[in-house]
Length: 450
Ligand code: FAD
Image 1: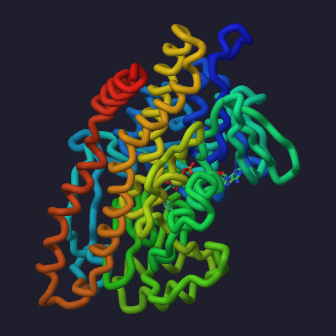
Image 2 (image 1 turned 120 degrees about the vertical axis):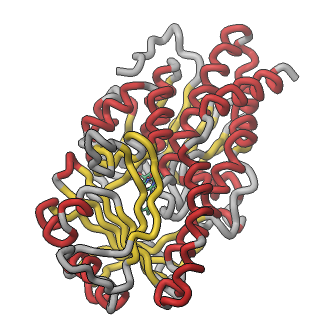
């Protein structure tokens, strides 16, 4: 359990708005630094949709730095490497297959042309069910820390150096500072930037996603033993399909992404979708892709993918209010790293609050200055990297959806994208998080003295 807080060593109180992956991981990290934390979540509980999510090895190392119990929670939620591997080669790979052509090979019923394979190292990705990971995280947080059914309406900075949070149910809470981890449609972001600021609203990426969990035995029948047990992308003109095993390999998480030239008019970003839409989008693709699409339910959610690409937030903090995770830099999911970026944010903030505690122990009157310095340092350390991911993810999807995949004469041209995808993936996977921690400490210490 992260450190219980006694009244004596209370130094700073933090209100986290949003109990998604980033809000909960950050809460665990701050509790470990003896910070007084409250998480306010609008939902009535933590049973998210049963979709899968994968974390890079680097994000898992960041979790370890924040609090090793987070890694234990991840693994106890059934996280498994997204490639099965064996003694000769235990590593994880990203594998891109030609999803479009119907080339067959005798005696290989599940044959598809391999376009590119990228070694992500041992346990390069670990996949789990989101709901199970959230439930495991909740178990390592003391019960009085999280309050559900608390939908934030507004935040006021008070002259006595506190923030006041006002919720939809009329209740009011106070803290020294507030961190908005309230996701892509963040209320805290619109309060920070102003409701009419263009970055207060995310933009439509013109891609829609359909997701499902497929029992492993069905996935094996559709894809063969090997592909069902290993992460694969099937790319083609204007669409792609990705799948990887989750939940101790009992299920395969599958997500199909389709380009949509239209505008998204609905205020909600989730609409009722039909398998027929998927069948139409993947018409004429390879038999393996058809087999997987057949396993999607007849009626399912259609997720419009929004991000903050067009209007990135110009700053992540103002005064005592700060943003982290998707609230700060919501990305489309094509690098599978949006939440990983939020884990890096959490490591940076946890490091900063350790520093803030030190400052306050030396000079309790410096609390306000220390908090603002911490948030300014967070903005300086995290903003460009996290906003780069938003751009890069769009570019990755453009590669997966190239129309050239449908024209044999242009296959070689289309395949030239993989060298760039390798560089982009490496920038995510091999991030020097220890260097980030050093920069964070140095940046804070230089500025807190001013
Ligand atoms: P969220 O998960 O959105 O959580 C925000 C929380 O805030 C929610 O619980 C919400 O109810 C609450 N909230 C919102 N408003 C309020 C309010 N006013 N008051 C109180 N509470 C509020 N990332 C990866 O790293 N790996 C992957 O494999 C991956 N796959 C993805 C696949 C898809 C199809 C998609 C769409 C995304 C994927 N991502 C992936 C990205 C990842 O899902 C997000 O980056 C991550 O969930 C962001 O976490 P968060 O905690 O910042 O926000």
